[in-house]
Length: 356
Ligand SMILES: Cc1ncc(COP(=O)(O)O)c(C=O)c1O
Image (cartoon, rainbow, N blue to C red; front, side, top):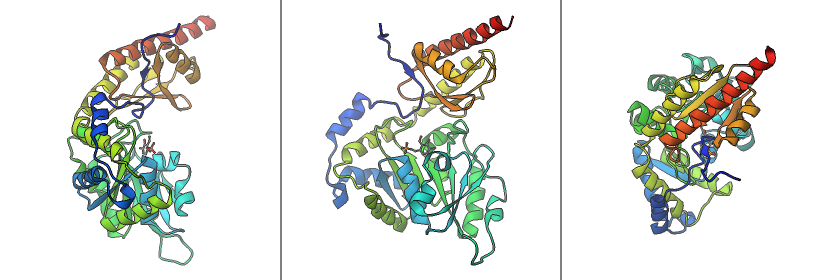
């Protein structure tokens, strides 16, 4: 018989469901046709986030991917080069959008947990010559998803921004989880955003809104992004109903991210007590679990966890990922730790039995 207790879903912070108060705010939203510029709730959201990020303007978009891709499209010409960090979402998970959407070349560079090594921009620039592509844009990510929610230090981002600006290269920041970086570090969003020309932030992750991200930057670029969004089929009509959820999230779901970070640390500590596993201490809400013991086969571990009502995702050949969020409380974290420890003990114990 299926268990009456809902699973502890740690696959992503995108799995949250709108709270009753958020749904109430959505129901009350004043709306209009946003393609005609008539939606007051969207306009309020765009104004508010532009101010929060210290940018001239902002554009509400359906997804983080669209926000990133618009930023690239509007900062480049076909044939330009875009420097991306090797583990970034833009390079790993946006289907080659740099090439497909903008006709640009990806210049891929390895990082130190999301921070580019000193001298990267200088090394990537080439002499002006008719043979070579021009480096136009650098894309960075903070917090860094594949580096386990790492906070890229502000001074490292600022150094990249300084090197890029001095050479006429723009910077885009994928800040899908910049809210987490801001809450964990105590550094305001505007200070982080100041290290980039454009910044994309998501409402649909830790902030718990059902849909939506925003791209903030200089007015002319945001104006152009509005045109391209329409061409890409992203013009939305009475979308204030969704923007209201984002405004509600800004008011009620930002400071509470500290709870997610605390729970992520508790989850990591609990899971690290299982044998044959290594779990780096998380800086924000993402926990990476390295299955080091050969008996810990990732698919089997995931299936055994699922059977115990705990959901994680695979995030590498021997790596699992868990993300804490609005819909996971202390009891959920305790259940996840208990299930993980039991599954690991069973697998490692069984294999030890087989070997003897
Ligand atoms: C760092 C980062 N950037 C961008 C995105 C894309 O967001 P969306 O799924 O809304 O397209 C994600 C999604 O997980 C992400 O983790």
